[in-house]
Image (cartoon, rainbow over the protein chains, first blue to last red):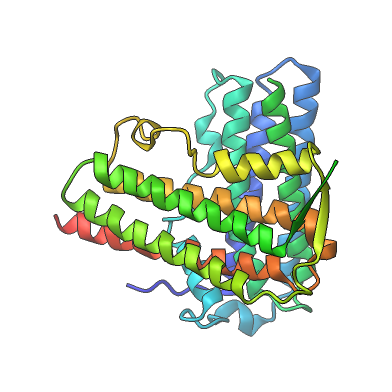
Length: 162
Length: 169
């Protein structure tokens, strides 16, 4: 069974990614007393807030027709890639990373979970970048991908230090 | 001491990672469960071999201009990271793949692992892009990224197919 989806839905998924990411970092920050680690988690949450705002803005700027119709051929490479993302096999599209948090996790476990989520977002956003035009915000998506890669580097660095 | 890493060597690293994947899945196919899981692993081996050949072919088409060097300092964070990722962190060449899966070698666990490894490789390639971008004048890294996106999509379809097969069993 093929999955059809449109640009509006793809951006909604991206927004959900960022919303969940911000909530995850804030919830995790609440579990620890280490000021440095809490500050890091709060800063990551703030950056995800920024990404959410960017995706919301890009979705608002979609023309009405682009919101409703499938804006790409599901059999071309961009469409196949996004379909693979959307159908839940490359990552769980319905998962909320906050469900992982019980309050008993170590900082290592939290950083590892965050790393998995950040990698998923990067992999997903590569498909979005291919989907949007240069005038539709390709450079904004590229900037978000770069920032998420920065998060990955930061998390890896802190994991190595723990 | 400086270490030069050009487009040809970058493609060779990515090809090496893919061949590590081939060895990884062959090991699982040899020592893991038989039946449907083994058949699936054989298909994964074929897929990774094809992916490795893609990068070998890209490498064979490089011009002399493409092979212009990018210079890293040996022992620099960037160089160390690249070597670590290529040899150890994408496919753990010194580990027993069966142990990596904690003995849980099912169709589902292997496909999920394959997808996770592809994501790790994509992150590695994007990190490469970050460090060599200014020197990647002919877009070799972008070409590698496009190729890897196709591989991830292919694995996603493969996972969907496995789900469909297993649900009928």
